[in-house]
Length: 279
Image (cartoon, rainbow, N blue to C red):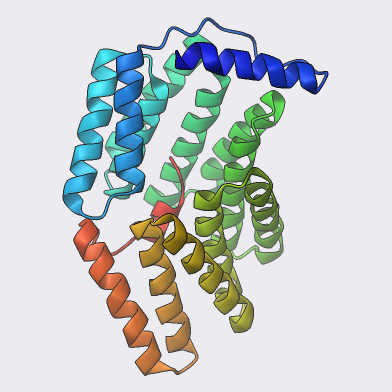
């Protein structure tokens, strides 16, 4: 009954706010069994503690897609799992197929999600900042048009990361600040934890070590509370690198060794910073 419940909740909220939805109302015909497999895959992926958990999550997502090929949210997450494994070609293949399907279905949210994913591929596979930024802004325009606050916040974060990587720190901090405000407003701790990690990286690059330390510690606290091993690993690794820059090598080694153990268990030896991006 999830589809009906979602529709009733949306109608009730819009009536209470005395407004109308910007998104065309569509008949919800998602295969409920497929959606259940998607939810299992999503949960397993976000809470995974080892490589085997990741494979199980991917299996759930593939099962969901087999049952309902139009379940683009499952395809999007499946693409993300390949992105983290550095299989950018497979990710791009899935993202482009999802975008084409989203256009046919007039699914604006998944159009934006697919464009964001494609932007991340251009950024990390080809270091093509211009094409990456173009896709991010196209995604942002869609999210803003339909009022998808979560999509807006996540795209702010991606644009901020891109600007920082291209050494445009003022622009990067501006967008990262917008992302943090949006995550807090939405009470999205998962996004907030990763966003704080990237904020810490920005402050580290510009030599503001105290601000970086605060951001990393806040990120670590959030990820420990919601038990996301990948987020904990990134926070620990970034703290280790920060203490190394400060010349506190014993403390740095402690954090780095803890981080390495987490990523080895997850089957991600290097813990790529690229995987902070969502796809």
